[in-house]
Every structure is written in C-alpha cells, then in structure tokens.
Length: 229
Image (tube, rainbow, N blue to C red; front, side):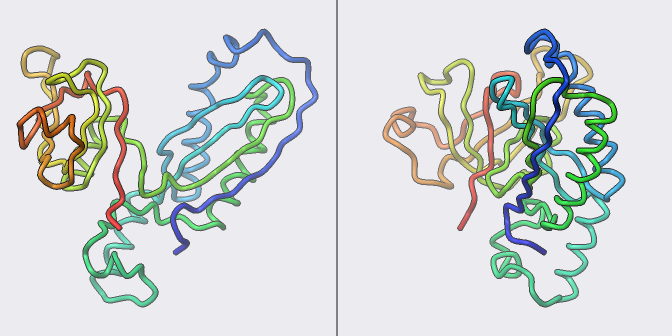
C-alpha cells in the first residue's frame, strides 16, 4: 500500500473552441462527477471528492479517490491477520483503517488513463488544455456528508461554521456523536457533538467555558479530519 497521499498527475491537451465561460462548465460538473464514479467503480475505487479550479486556460481537475468498501474490508482483514508492511500507526491502533484510502500510485495512474480518455470522448471539459490530478484524500480529508461524519466518529476533526456558536466559528475536537438523520428537517435536524477536551484549545475556545459542543450539520461550512501523528 502506498504512502498517504498517493498522487498522480496527467496533462491533457484539447484544442476545441472555448464555450461560454464557467457557467457552461458548472453545468457539466455533475456529468464529470458521474463519469468519475463510473470509472472509479471499474477499478475497485470510490470517488471521495472532485474539484475543478483555475481560469479557463489553466484548469485543474482534481479527483480524490479511495478503495471501495470491499478493498477497505480486505485491508481490515490484513490487519487482523497481522500482515507485514502495514503502517506502524495502523498496527498500533493510533490510526484507523478508515482514515487510509488504500490506493496506490498504480491505482491513480490507471484511473487517470481511463478517465482522461472518457473526458475527451464525451467532451466533458471543452475548451483549452487542462490538468487532471488523481490522488487520495489524505489523512486530513474533508468531510462533506452526514455519512462521512458517521464513518469517522471517534476521530479528531476541525470544524468551521457558517454562524457562530458561543461567539466562535472555529472548533476542534473528537467527534463523539452523530445524531440520526430524521425523515424531515426540523427541530431534530442532524448534528454532531465534539469533545473539546480531546485537544489543546485556543484561547477563544477556552473562553466559551464548555467541554463539548453540538453543531448542526447544516451550520457546518468546512470540516476535515485532523491527523493524529
């Protein structure tokens, strides 16, 4: 298994006339995502996140991947069997297998080759040249869905909220609880609970005088794991 983050970069040149700006590109982003998911699945991978950034002539398409559920289960089995060559922190239990993507450089290269061909054939990124980057999400991966928070319960996370809670928009702690997703949004809207005692807090967080904080998922602007090294 490769070190985190595994990374592959490929450049693809396209010389078709540029279409009408980023509005046209935004309309195709979901098509690009769907195509990435299909190619990833064919390689035993799952799409974690996709980003299209940069001006029209210097666009970068970033694709973050990990092994699919079967691949992660195989890694868990390898750990249980005491396989050699596993990261020391994984063996010691200070790093969860869920925090590793499990993908290798070869996985990224194979995905990029097939995905690049599909992008060109289906003309999903019309216009000037672009750079395709495929990599693992890293140990500081972003959390974007309720499923992500449930999966990484017990891990350290860093949160930035849209609206301040106790005059603070930046929180860091251990994710100890994720409420069930209700059938409809309302007073019982899904939320997470952080244990603030799990990490050393900055002065602003200390002034809140609380040891835990509950944050509604809809109030989370940014969230990511904090590597425990």
